[in-house]
Amino acid sequence: MGGRVEARGGLLGNRYELLVVLASGGMGRVWRARDTLLERPVAVKVLRSEFTGDATFRARFRAEAQHTAALHHPNIASVFDYGELVEDGEQLAYLVMELVEGEALSALLERVGALDAARTLDIVRQTSAALGAAHAAGVVHRDVKPGNVLMGTDGVVKITDFGIAWSASSVPLTGTGQVIGTAHYLSPEQAEGGKATPASDVYALGTVAYECLAGRRAFEGENSVQIALKQIREEPEPLPSGVPAAMRELVHRAMAKDPAARYPDGAALRAAADAVTLTGGTAPIGRTGTHGTAVLPLPPVPLGRTPASSPARRFRRPSPVLLGALAALVVLAVVVALLQTGSRTPSEAGSPSGTTAPGTTTSAPAPPPTIPVAAGGFIGRPVAEVQAELVGRGLQVQLAPVDTGDVAAGLVTAVGPEGELAPGTVVTVSYAVPPVVIPAPVDTGTGAGTGGNGNNGNGNNGNGNGNGNNGNGNGNNKDDEDD
Image (cartoon, rainbow, N blue to C red):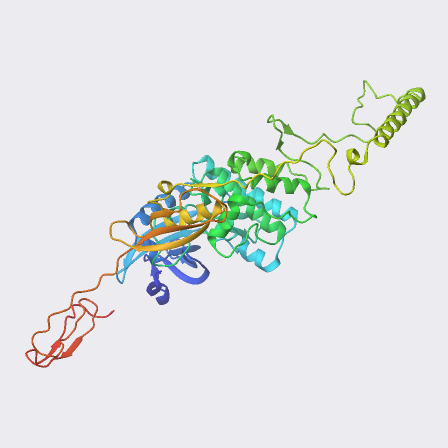
């Protein structure tokens, strides 16, 4: 990831002096640096060579850097510069950003655990305002998480790293073992392979707010696949009882499984956050009924006035005669109910043994629903994607690698059994792996000895001694020098 340049402490791009490492991650390393041209502190993200060596990634990320540089908002970390260069034969790419004095939200949560509702609400307000500005410009973040939310010492919250996860999705990472982003903040539609939308960013920020309030992530698992499946199928544990109801409702709606049930974008989430009243935690916010009508809190009632009163018309107390008549009706209704209960048979009233009333019939329990599996819907798809889908349907998966040169590595070649399967059935998923190539034996002549071996281009000398017709020989296929 630019190790030679970083180790030497020289100028990156003949301009940026790398000083101190601020953070390291799967995408690269962030440095505190100095812009020697403008004489100002900056943050420089040097991206890993696993990504920068891929032309598709560079093209995507260059476009995202341009889009992000066009965003101007007090809660978005500004992008100042982007560069690509080759040093010592290594392809480098770097991003120069505004330096935020403070720490990432991930570091704060690791240090203090849960945050109170007021501070969490402030983080949601500022971050959703930034997302709202990005969404209005047609930019989706795609990787909202505590590590990308920067907490300034001045109280200003800034979000960073727009578009990096999307750019990196174009790079095959089977050789590096790196995982881009994290499933802990992935929206259900993204976990299912769908396109990220502004509502996806809202879900991610909802999971961040949940973690702030609960002191734990919404979903945990042994691996990313398990966590992604929980994002699709499960609901998180309830927030602590001390969280105000209005804040609880805000997080609940932001984390709705259906994107249509969430706040549609950052601006809508910001408006909802502005409407939250934390005192007492009883104010409902933006809850929509079955007919799309929002349930709003009642306006405050002035002192000395009942909710139905007004200067022109005041509510009159009912007369004693009316109160007495109402009380008599209530007593009569209770007596009638008791008489009806007493006249029932034990089985009609519900006996402790739970027996049914005479004349009723009981039906046999319905068989468990089956799970349809058709191999045609899986063949040719990535094996990890197929495995996640089958497990999500309630089946077990056994992977079977198949050596073949006819199908790209990692794609499914067969699935069985097919048909209507019972939950828990083991399904075998065959997938392609490159065939092992065994080199042909080398003709060493009529003698019994072996000749010298040499490796082209790697700077290694090959030596060999042979008997018979080969005699003694030294092989040297060295084409270049070591670095």
